Structure formats: C-alpha cells, structure tokens
Length: 329
Image (tube, rainbow, N blue to C red; front, side, top):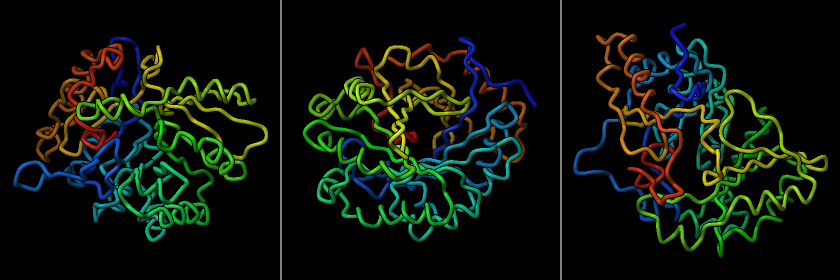
C-alpha cells in the first residue's frame, strides 16, 4: 500500500465521496430550487467507468476503505449498477454507500445490492406527502417510502434517512420523525441547513440550529454513540426505547472539522478538499490509460498539504460551492 493520505493536521482520509453526475430530477428548495440547469450548450462528460476505477484504486491504495457514490442523483446514470460493482470490486474498499432521493429504489435496489452496495442514505425531508412535494418539487413520497421498505425486505439491516430541517417548513415534524423510527432500524440524520453561494436568503429564513435538537434529545434520554474510523460527520445518538438512531450533522459547531476523514471527487474529475473549499484540483488528466497511478497519488498528497484546518462557514464564506449538487453534497 502507498502512504496513507494525511494532511498537515494529521487527519487521515478513509472516506471518499465520489460524485458521478450533478444532474438531479428533484428540485429541492435548499439545493436546486429551479431544477438542474446544464452548464452551457454541451452536455458535460462525467467520469467514465475506467476513470472511476482508476481514482478509486488510487484512494484504496492510500488507505481509503469507504466510498460514497453521490450526485446529483446517482441512479440517473444508466451504468449506476456497473459503477457500484466497479467500486465494490476494488481491493481495500469495504463499504460502498450511496445517497439517493430514493425514487428508483423500489425497482432497482435489488440490483444495487447484488452489485455490492452495502449502505444506503435516502433523502426524505418530510413525512407529510404535501410538505414533501413542497420541499422537493416532486410528488414522489409514496414511491420513496416503498423504496425504503423494499431495501429492508431484501436484507439491508439499516437505512439512513437524511432530513434537512427548516424552520416554518418541516421543523415541526420532529415528533413525527421520532415516532417513525421507534420500531424501524432507520438512522435518521438531521442535517443543518448550510449556507451556499445561491442560498443566502433561504438560509436566513429557514435555518434551525442542530444544537437545539441535540439538547432536546439529551433531555429525553438519548445517548451519544462512539464513532468508527470511516464514519461520516454525524454525531449519532441512541435510545433504549428506540430501534432507530438519530444522527446530527452540525457544520456550524466548533471543532466540526477536527474529525474530517473524507475527500471529494466531482463528477468532472476534480478533487475537492472541502465541501466549502474555494477551488477544485484537476485529476482527470491522470485518470487516463497512459497515466501512472503514482503521479495521481502524488498530486493528491501534495494538495492535501494545502487543506485548511476548517471551513469558513462561520464567516459567511461558503467557498466556491454554488449549491450542494455541484460537488456531491
């Protein structure tokens, strides 16, 4: 194995978030309220299967054990099962996850599992079909919920459900969400609304602090669970009376970045050291057949030495990220 990916703050990177498309068919208010807008006239050329294989192999050779395949909506790619298989068959990768809006799960999750998908996150921003429609721009609540049921039917022991809580929209549904996971092995992940380049007004209007939710949970007997090496950034809470768990993702909390263990590669082949970084680093020239893996690893290692100790969200600086679909959330 090559040297472990590590930055100058001694953070090691076990987790790659790999975007395979920035196209999405939902119009979530906090991400793509006007729907997907393709850049310019030409259709973007997203990473090919051989390019995906090369980038994942390089990461695995430098200690990465978990890959999350993201978008946009990753299942919009016709070769999504082949992408899963390619990642799952890479030596050293033990966890292959995806984040999806879930609308194709009922029909396709069996195929994904057979291809090697070990973990699923589904975005469900409301348990009220009308509010779900209002937030996502799509009337697909029933399909998404039946997709989650299907995942359990075919053997997934846990499904993670992502919820962006927003004041005056779905924040009042917290009791309903808790009731939903009482007897279901769902890890409900409340994600704080994040300020991105195009979303200042929405953020100011709807932001809910994760700290308030955490205080409520602790007051009601929820207990913090220990993190694993390649876990994401959620603080996970468990309760003796609940089959489900609750994860809180609070990017505005002090020390949020101390445990950073993940890097991002965009669908266009750029390395992003942070979701809120101010630039991406071109890798695509080193993902071609005639390129040496050692040169790719060297470029990533060199860039890691420039990774900041923290994001600058507290200063209202979301870097170059226009919206969360642009580099896979």
